[in-house]
Length: 253
Ligand SMILES: Nc1ncnc2c1ncn2[C@@H]1O[C@H](COP(=O)(O)OP(=O)(O)O)[C@@H](O)[C@H]1O
Ligand SMILES: [Mg+2]
Image (tube, rainbow, N blue to C red; front, side, top):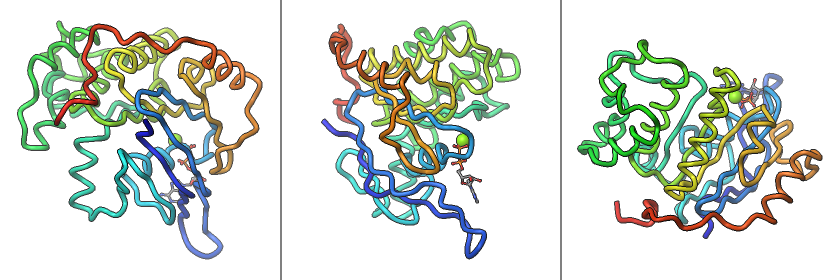
């Protein structure tokens, strides 16, 4: 089932001679439960694209469908609610609230939505993310990897339709980066979490099921040799086993 689909998605910044076409007619589609990486160099339009996928930034033209809903047809208020409930975002610099502890940061998207977080699920996430002993700690008492794990917990707490990650390992050493990507992959397998991750690091991207390449705001068909190897390998790989866990995305919200 297709969960995310864009048509001719375009973002133009500025006017006249200052005009920059950051994203240029991108049409892509992501299946429910897929883990997709988008690679591209700095300035290629990755963040702009991701923000439009997540309902953060309105496109100049084109559309984004999430779960068959054309999100930019919503007014700003509805879009804000949709984004809060259906989109999980992870950034390079974690964007945690410094005065809130780990548990409070993780619960924040629910609180902002006027709901109590599912405490059992929060505990389970903390356990899975290796944060059980850190729940009362403030962000400045945590390592970079722990802060990013907290941000992953915060992104997952609402059981979003899609998880979007913008250079999630961009500020971490290579060992911690591997851990973070492994956790994203685990959430993809365990919770059937659909993930779109952008990165300029091909080694990180290779962990995904599928790799797309963006250049000058366009998804290019010309794959690099390494991406082709990832994509071919994935085609040969058996789908991940169902596992014993529930498919959160299929549940009523
Ligand atoms: N708010 C903005 N105003 C003007 N230009 C922007 C803005 N945001 C991004 N750009 C430009 O759009 C292009 C793509 O930027 P971005 O999406 O941040 O790329 P990436 O994340 O791949 O580094 C760049 O040329 C950048 O300078
Ligand atoms: Mg960027």
